[in-house]
Structures are given as structure tokens and as C-alpha cells.
Length: 138
Image (tube, rainbow, N blue to C red; front, side, top):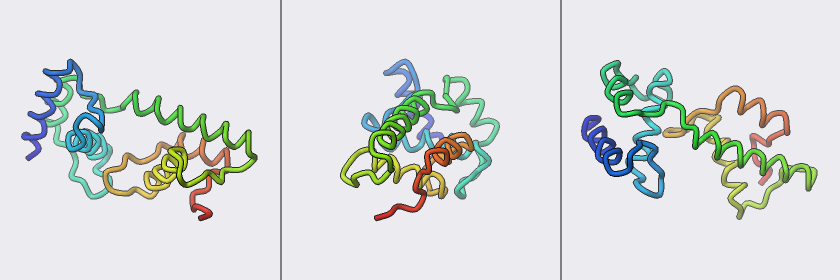
């Protein structure tokens, strides 16, 4: 099964020139790519570690173990949250907004929910610095 998904990723790369799969383009492959990053990160969340042979295969096709796009998106939402706090003086965000959904996603990442890359220590520190509500008020 791993090799089937790897071949799907190869086909994606051949068609797109890169392996930065977006969720809206191919959700199953997107989740598989994320799971490879998680598995390489010490096998967290009950995943088996990625073997050295698998790492080599992924490296050879330009697999990005750290997603720059993901970091940029995280930074953009974090800055949006900082701006919200400056404007309103709190982080009680309307639950019908994408910002609230992002906040909920950060809570799940910190809790180590399956298929979610864990927050870095730096991301946790940044959120703590603005008194992020790890337990929602609602």
C-alpha cells in the first residue's frame, strides 16, 4: 500500500512538476504526504517510522519534509489572530469564521490528534505569548 501511494505521488509529480500536493487537488494523497512527515518525525501518533529506503525514495523525487507553504499559511493565520487580539482585546473569535476553525485546528495539533502534524515548540510559544485559549470558551 505504501508503494501504491508513492506511485500516485510520482504520477502527481510528473503531471505537476513538484510534490506539493494541495488538499483540494487530491485529498487522499495530501493526507498521505502529511502522514509521511509525521511518520518520519519519530513515528508519532501511532504510526510506524518511515524506513530509510522509503526516505531515500521520497528524497529522490524532491519530497519536502518541511512544508514551506504550510509555514507561510500558519504565519498568515497567526498574524490574523494577533491583529484580531489587537483590535478587540481578546481572542473570543466567532465560531462561524475560518479564523476560529484555524484555532480549533491548532488545539487538535497540540493534542496530537491523528493525521495532524504536531505544533512546533516555537508555534506553541507564539500562541502562548498572545494568551491563546487552548481550551475554548464555548
